Image: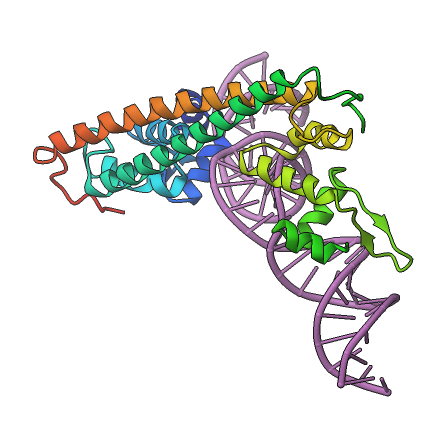
Amino acid sequence: MRIGELAERAGTSTRTLRYYETHGLVRAARSANGYRIYDESELHVVREIRTLLGAGFALADIRPFVACLRAGNASGHVCPDSVAVLRRKLAELDAGIDRLQAVRQELRDQLADAIAHREEACTRRCTAR
Amino acid sequence: MRIGELAERAGTSTRTLRYYETHGLVRAARSANGYRIYDESELHVVREIRTLLGAGFALADIRPFVACLRAGNASGHVCPDSVAVLRRKLAELDAGIDRLQAVRQELRDQLADAIAHREEACTRRCTAR
DNA sequence: GCTTGCCTTGACGTCGGCGGCAAGGTCTAG
DNA sequence: CTAGACCTTGCCGCCGACGTCAAGGCAAGC
């Protein structure tokens, strides 16, 4: 399979695949003319990468998952390194959610305040540049 | 007040204040020698900007709040434009929280799965590069 | 032969909110 | 007179995950 086909089947771009390769995540053999030749299994690798990226992981965090897949495991998250990253990400996620919840509460308060003072405040035009 | 003092009192840098100025958020008069001279009220403006940035707002989103302050209102969030941004940000925040919650659930499941299969999977060394 | 479509490497652009440096002008204290 | 602390504009660097050319090689159909 060449790069164009892999890109299409993985739902991404050739540029992205080359980018992953330069960062050591995806592997390719080369045919006589220099074209990249991908093994069927690379499709799973790329999909793993895309899924994790979509979940907010950085490429560096994804590395252990790919290594885990390459080590012959059916899923990339069963290895110790992956689990460590999972735990860390989970903690980050919790912190992020807490932060957003706090901001959300603050915004709701401000919104309520703004509506309550709608008539007494904002007497001049608020669109002043 | 010159730029160094404002920066210190607002807990930011001179570089940042100039940046805000080029983006039309902060205003300064000029003294004879070309130095920026800030009105006392700019301190409130800068603090409003910093607060909103900290809450995850983009500079473009903050503009109406600054305009609202300049229009003579005690707080920047009482004007219609600000309220519109607040509503939008609140919705974005909710969406973001939902997304993170979903990812979080997914991670927890994967973590549980990884732990459950700890012994039967990952037979080879998972740290293969 | 010529076009079309695939592929290659390399290098610069993007977005946002600044940091940091260069090369100079200004003001004040000693 | 000089040092040093402030200020000015301008421009490049940064992070991350790519997009977007540019300039060319390779393969296949007509």
